[in-house]
Length: 341
Image (tube, rainbow, N blue to C red; front, side, top):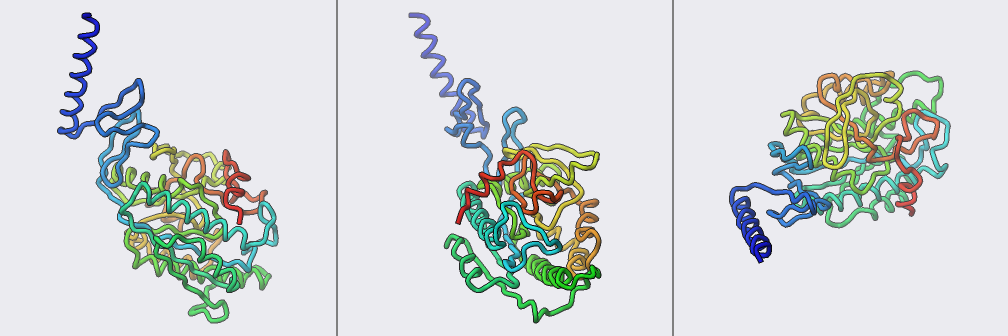
């Protein structure tokens, strides 16, 4: 009988303690069930609250001081060119529009997942297209949910407002491809200046995991709150960065680890503040071709924090032998098949 009474007293005490914690704004973790009794949540569902706090089991709670209000996703598309500067085939050897369609579908799905966790976040898609067929453009627009604002900007490769200065490659076709690509990059940076908060620049050959945008937004809020600064996030774990022995700091995001890097390609997320701060250097990159092309971007990374996910949140669909493409420890075939048209 005494054991039964003790059990009842313990249950009553626990309920009272939970109520007190709820009033004081504290949370408890039941280590026997991994549940959060104060908020009635399970650990598998996550405990971080957008714009308020980030929580990781073992490292505790971090208050969010940098709330993300919205994200503009700017996608540069061109289904008429396979690879801008190479005469090679991409992984899976499909027509270029297949990579574009899967990129769009994956981002649309990832945005839907983001909206579930961040119901009040502003999300807008902007498509900057150059050289795609009208049928391809029409199909691209069908992949977006009606709950997201979507804009289309079509550039005519024969009527560009300016002439980017490209490096002489003794190949007129490649030089023309580079020129039109730089035109879309130039347009994307100009649009970004009028965006609301975060901007995600995406090339049309990056297929994203469903959780990609959610992890990136949760991590952006956490990292910018901890380090008290704006930053740059990548969605891809680039294999060529493992060819060098460089120091890298490892930090914990929402469900992924992230590491500091000093290089990337042209798919990256940052804030409007970073764009305004380095606008001249970004515009110069889209006006005067450098070698490597992303040289100006890498110079920005020397001043700003840039982080890459471990493992990758997206697959860059380039040639299988390219050091700039296929991320390690990623199920490439599954990610490709998940977005079959």
